[in-house]
Every structure is written in structure tokens, then in C-alpha cells.
Image (tube, rainbow, N blue to C red; front, side):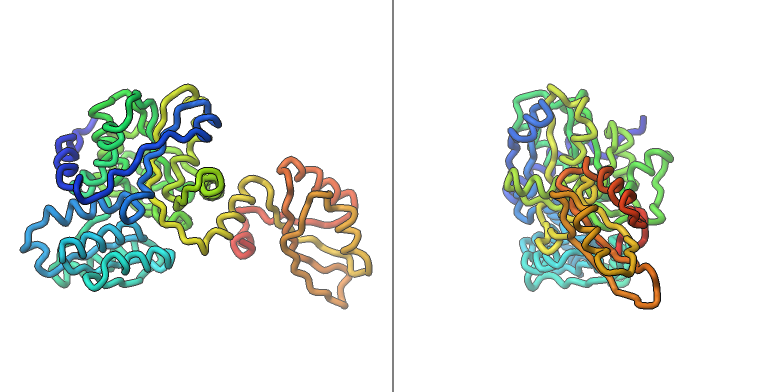
Amino acid sequence: MTTSPLQIEDVIIAYQTLKDIVKHTPLQKDEVLSDRYDANIYLKREDLQLVRSFKLRGAYYLMKTLSGEQTENGVVCASAGNHAQGVAYACRALKVPGRIFMPTTTPRQKRDQVKQFGKDYIEVVITGDTFDDSYAEAIHYQEANDMAFIHPFDNEKTIAGQGTVGMEIMNDIDENIDYLFSSIGGGGLISGLSTYVKSISPGTKIIGVEPGGAPSMKNSLAKNEVVALQEMDKFVDGAAVKQVGNITYEICRRFVDDIVLAPEGKICTTILELYNQHAIVAEPAGAMPISALDFYKDEIKGKTVVCVVSGGNNDIGRMAEMRERSMVYEGLQHYFIVNFPQRAGALREFLNDVLGPDDDITRFDYTKKNNKSIAPALVGIELADANDYPVLMERMRAEGFIVDKISADDNMFNFVL
């Protein structure tokens, strides 16, 4: 087993610096989740942090430890949103100028928040399609202008700052924690909190959660070295990282017991449930630990579990897409190419004889072609119950409709969604 580059003392020192700066966020028992999983489920509410995510902790602590000479020319960072807000807040509080590079995929809500927190102390540069693209631009700018780089995860000071989340959890809970679930992007949060928690409670299982479409840490641990993803799904913008850090990899290899890959559709279901049932606004990366509970439902029964809701910077404009992704994942929304006979009454037959009483057409794109016997239509159907799908398909076949299902792996599915 490798020696960790971070020790519990590093987190304690960071806590002393941050305790009067960051908000000590609540650790709340969630009765709805506890009943659902027959366990004691606690939520660490970092979505209620000053910048609505844990990232302020690491950003502020790293900047606070820099000398005046190091920050004389200002600081630079790259971020998909939350780290940028933490750096912006710290720049204004410490009166240090900053230049912040963000990918084009960052939701506008996060961009606006960065400007709000940093005011005149920061400049935002939108560049690249991913965090890694922005990171490369930021490093180039930092080197050319002799500025300090504030790394979002692969820096021991950043990790120590994030580790204060774990220190607060252990200070606030009266029970022994059996499982602690935390999201993984670059690995800073889980590295920091696992360093502290494992030192205090070595029996606690640390479960990391990554997006199904961006398993950078899981792949690296499986190959025993840091590897870069060749492609990834950028939907979970706060955790879509092509390559984890070298420091965070070493810490995770030592302390993380397992990594769950959460499907993007499942994450969307969790976001909607948190909002509707718990009045919690969570962003995709913040909802991932709760999404992972379904994959551990047998192991956590009767246990004490903590899930870190790492952020709440969710753009309301994305909710329609999240609902649709959730419906598809839950088997309630389906898309088809239906070849309709070019004769009067064909559509009426489809509506009357194929659709069930509780089925609903959510999309219908069709153009009549007079010189052909059949014409395709794009049809979206919403079911009241996922178990109705086989019955729907059987009625389509029985009525003679030629149908092609558009699967989530089909390139056309992205166009439809």
C-alpha cells in the first residue's frame, strides 16, 4: 500500500484557517431516504455552502497559503463552474486579481455566479469544450504571465481544504458511519474527506461515485495508473474530467473502497426526486452519491450512511432535459420510427388500436410523401408504467406497423433528446 501524500494533520490545519470563512454546513438525517433503504441516511449539505458547493474550501485555503510574492501578478484557474466560484469568492475576499478559464459547456447560471462572487477582481474566459481544454489554456496563460495556478483538485492544499468536509461530518455525527458516499470528478473532495475519515474511523467504507459516461478514476484504478479517457459524456459537468490528478489517484488507491458508476438518467431521476420530495436543489454531480444508493441497497440495509451533496448550482433551464433523461432511464419515455401506410385513417388506427388508455404521444414528426406507399414518422410515447412497454410493442406488431426503436446508443437519440 502506498504512503498517502496527505495526512490528517493537514486537514486539521486547513480547518483552523477556514472555520471562520466557510459555512459549517448541516449534516441532516433524511427520513424519506432512510425509510426507502431501511437505513440511517444522512446528507452532508454542501449545496448550502456560501458558493453552493464545497469548492470554496479548497480554493480559499490554497490561495490563503500563498505568499504575497506568489500572488503579486494574480492567480489563474480552470473550472467547469464550482471551483471557479470558489476562486472568484477568494479573489474578492483576499483582494487578489484572478483570470478564470471555463469550458463552453458550463451552464450560464454558473458563469453568472462566478462574475457575481468575483466582481471586479476576476475576468472570465470561456474556451474549449471540456474542463481539460480550459485547463490547457489556463496553464499556458499562467506560464506566459508568471501567475499562480489554483488547481481544482490535484494540489495538497486544495485537497486538505476539501477534507474539512470530512472533519465536519465526523464532528457532527454521534453514530459510527458504515458507508460514506462521495462524488468524484478530479478526486479532490473524496481524497480530502477519506484522508480524515479513514484516520478517525478506518472501518468506514468510502464509496466514490462517478458518472457512467466519465469513469476516469475507476479506469485509472483498474489499470493501476492514471489514464485519460478517450471520450466521455459531458452531461455531469461538475464531474466530467478526462484525467484525474496524480495526487488524488494515489490517495484514492489507498482509501477508496469502491467506485459506483451512476447512469446519467438515474442521476436525473435523483435530481427530480430531491427537488420534489426533499425541497433540495442539487446539481448532477451533487446528486450522484444519492443515485448510487440503489446499487448498494442490500449492503446498506440497517447501516448508517452519509451522502455528500457536493453542490447545488443547477441551471433551471436544464430541468426539461433532465426530466426527459429521467423518463427514458426509468422506461417511461420511448422513441420510434413508425412507417405509416400512405392511406387515410392510418394514424387514427395507430391512436385507437396501438396506444393504451394511459399512453401519451409526446412527439410526432411526419411529412406525407405522395409518391411512396409508406412514410416514416418520428413518434415519442410516454407510458404511465414501464411494464406497459412489451404490451405496446405487441400491439404494434399485431396491427402491422413497421417500427424501429431508437435506442439510447443510437446517434439519432441525441438529436431526439
